[in-house]
Amino acid sequence: MTPFDAATHADPYDYYSRLRQQNGLLFDEDLRVWIASSANAVEAILGHPDCRVRPLNEAVPPAIAQSSAGVIFGRLMRMNEGPQHLCPRQAIEPALNSIGTENIADVVSHVAEALDNPGENLDELMFTLPVCVIATLIGIPSSQQQDVAKLTRDFVACLSPLSNDIQLGIANDAATRLSQLFSELLGNADEATHFLSHLLSGCEAIGWIDQKALIANLIGLLSQTCEATAGLIGNTLVALHRQPELVEDIRATPLLVADLVAEVARYDSPVQNTRRFVAKRCMIGDTVLEAGDTVLVLLASANRDPFVNPNPDSFLLKRTQRRTVSFGAGRHKCPGQQLALAIAAETILAWLRRKPASSIRSLRWRYLASLNGRIPLFHRDRETYE
Ligand code: HEM
Image: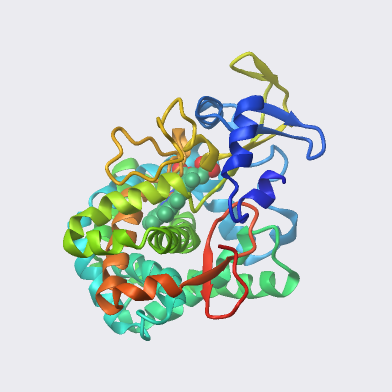
């Protein structure tokens, strides 16, 4: 197995455990990359200033460099270091934190009402609902939200190295359309939602005036939400399928759903790995990394490291001092973590309200092709990866 196969393998966790036992940071001669698998190595790499999010001479992947999708990509905080990372982050993070997660239940219920049978249609529940929730918070009118969710799903194809030319073309059209929609939205700033007003005042307070970068990073909020939150919702349904007794526990005590999604995020992370590129020779523990090296950072393995989570392979709702790096660490740590957990929790409750307890047993799935995401796609046929 390679770490890329592991992301969508039925059970990658033995493989991760063997990697950790071999060495928390080791060089893979075949892949020509470093693999960080222990919690220590993962946190050290993510915290190191010389381990960057993009290769030194490749701000944007060549396949999209000349396109509208590439222009958006090149402005995302997620894909930048220095001021192009810091300015959007300083404006957006406090605005995201200002959204009380207690309001998310209402937004999720409202969005779920407008969707096409979200009890039956798990694709809508996992991919469309979370993006519509973020679109609502940003202020996209409800009449446009489902289009925006579709465009976002098209756009995220440009983030995957597995996408073909047709998907990249569609991602490009989506990038153009989303940019227009956000440009119109910012033109009507008098009607801004709580989140958007907070964000615009934040931009003003730090003197960051770059409308194009702001639009790119608003698109970034939708695209960062899309597949990762779908994966968290999907992996929670997988956990319930494997432990159906939990369905009754959650129905009896709905507040437990927060513990459920938090433990799923640790136990079966929707984002299994991320990458870093070494800009300058540096030391991680007693290992020297050279400029130009690539590090594959196994977030899902770090979550199962017994040094940070005792008894890591047990699924424990009431785990004490749970440590999770599924949302990253260091300067690029996910600013949407609390929001994502709240959306996933409320979505699971919305699904449980619509379905009988027994329906969890009939779920069948395979994983969406990906080198880093673990996102189950549910279906009714024989083909399963349980
Ligand atoms: C279960 C859902 C989610 C997971 C597992 C997740 C995971 C992550 C991870 C691992 C990173 C860091 C990547 C790296 O350092 O290489 C990240 C960054 C980011 N996430 Fe999330 N995310 C989720 C949902 C969200 C949501 C709902 C939002 C916003 C509404 C969001 C916004 C962002 C942004 C803007 C960044 C880039 C931050 C930076 O570069 O400073 N994410 N996310």
